[in-house]
Structures are given as C-alpha cells and as structure tokens.
Amino acid sequence: MHNLKKTRIRHTKGPFAMTVVYSFTGAAILASIIFSLLLFLSIDENPWMKVLFGALAVIFELGKFFAWYEFGERIARRHLLAAFSAFSFYSVLAAISIGGSIGGINSATNTAQRYVDVQQNKVAVFNLQIAALEKQIDLNNIAAEKYIELNRIATGVARIQKENALLRQDQVELAVQRDNLPVASQGSVFGLIGSLADGLNINATDAQLGLVVFLSVLLDLFAAFFVGLIGEELRFRRTVAGNQQKWRQQSSQQPSKVAENSPVTDNDMTIPRSEILFQKALDVLLKGDVRCTKKAIADKLAISAEEVDLIFFGLLEKGLVTRKANHHFSWQGEAV
Image 1 (cartoon, rainbow, N blue to C red):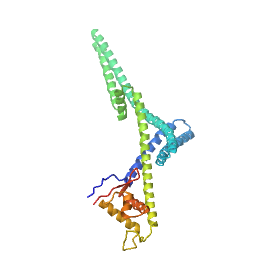
Image 2: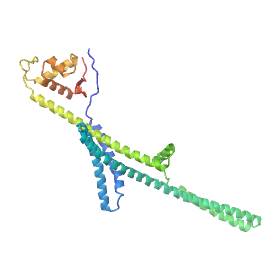
Image 3: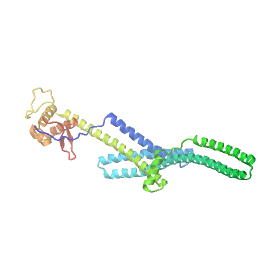
Image 4: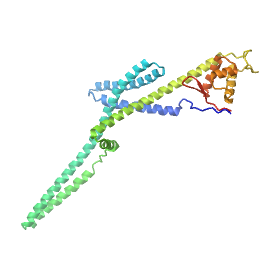
C-alpha cells in the first residue's frame, strides 16, 4: 500500500458564496459613496454645483475601486511598474474617499449629538423653572414665619399658604411636562465614545474623531478586500477555463489510431489514443506504481512529452492533481 499526502484543492466559489461576496461588496461601495456624497454636497448650496460635486464623488469612489481591481490584475501579470502606478492612483482616491467618509460620519454623529443636546437643554430649562418655584416657596415660608411673629396668621399666613399651593401646582405641571419629553437616548455609539475617552484619558471630541477615522478606514479596507476577492476569483476562473480549452484543443489534435511502435494497444480502434493513455496513467497513479511527475509517467508508458502534457491537463481538470508554485504537480487521489 502506498499512502499519498493529501493537500487542499482550490475550487471555484459556488453561486451562494459569490452572491454573498457581491452583496457585501455592493453594500460597502454604496456606503462609501453615500458618506462621500455627504461631504461633497455640503461644499456649495447651488443645485447645479451639488449635482457636479455629487457626480465627482461617485466618479472618485468607482474609480478608486476599479484602480484597486486593476492593481490586482497587474500584480497577477507581474507588471510591477504598471501595478505601482495603479496603486498610486488608488492611494490618492482612497485618501479623498476616507476624508469624505470621515466628514460624512462625523456630520451624522454631530447631528445626532445636537438632537441629544437639544433634548437635554429642554429638560434643564424645566428643572430651572421648578427650582425657581421652589426658591419662591422657601421665601414665602420665611415671610410666613414673620407674619406668625407679628400675630397676623389670619391675613398674611393664609395668603402665603394659598400662594404656595398654587406654586406647588405649577411645579407638578412642569414636572409632568418634563417627564413627557421624548427620551434623548445617546445610543451605543456615544456610549462607546465616552468609554474611549475615559479609557484613553482624552476628551470626548478627540475620542469621537479617532472613532470616526477608524470606521472610515475600516470601511475602505472592507470594500477593497471584497473587490480584490472578486478579482482573484475571476482570474482563477479564467485560468481554469484556459486549461480546459487547451485540453480540448490538444485532445482534438491527437491521432485517433494508435501508432504501430507504441506499446499502448486496444482492440477498439474507435477509442481515441488520448483517452487510452489517460486511463492507463490514472491506473498506475492510483496503484502508486510511479511518482506523480511527468517524467515518471512518460518513462512508465513510453510516451512523448506532448502526450504527457495532455494527460496532466486532464488530471488537473478533474481535480486529481494540483499545480505547485514550482510548476510541479501534486497527486490528490487515493492510492489503492
């Protein structure tokens, strides 16, 4: 028995995986475009200028991701100078995009913070009014004590008590109005900003800026990762399709009859020679009689280099072998 080491086989991604990848990529690109629009549209209030700046933001965003895709293509072709130019172009557009995202996220955060501040100010106003009424009641109580000392309970004290009752009623009404205000919930983002500020011993403004920058950069990296993933998958599929086409072309070019001096024979002359050789090579590899190399197969079957190439393209297409980085092949089947 001959045990062969198994390695992972690279397969094309299925429809579900590609649907998820395209969905995440589209969502990330759309979010990046929206945040850039928030910044570019605030540059000028003129409607025509808004349209122009908005179109510029969309062009920059789409151009940025295409530049990243082109960078991956040129790296795969080992065109380093061209890849450097594409990366430089991407870097400039990415810097603009990250700046736009920072401005957009910061604007949205500030808007939410302003709403919270307005609600808190309304509550503070009600508290001040209630406190002012409480002070007036305290002053009335002091005056009532003076009336008691002067034995004017029936006139002065009764009037003050009536006035205090009205003030207490106003306090209750103000408290009800205050409690009926919408709850100004700061949300988890503001809680996170506060926690960062406390943990890093910085003010809330610096913590908010740091969080906004981090989210903007993360959004750009997230989108770039999935764009690169799509590019890598498309390149792999092109490679597989090219190998399959080469296999078909070489198969069609092989003679349909076996040469007289060939050790490979078969009674049914309608079977192409390429299929006979492929099956025989598969048999010896499954039995572990030879190593998974072109030279070993050629020596075992006494065939030409072109026929060996044809056999290995077929094995690669069926996933029975994989090509290593050094262009050698690794057997993936089970030995018998």
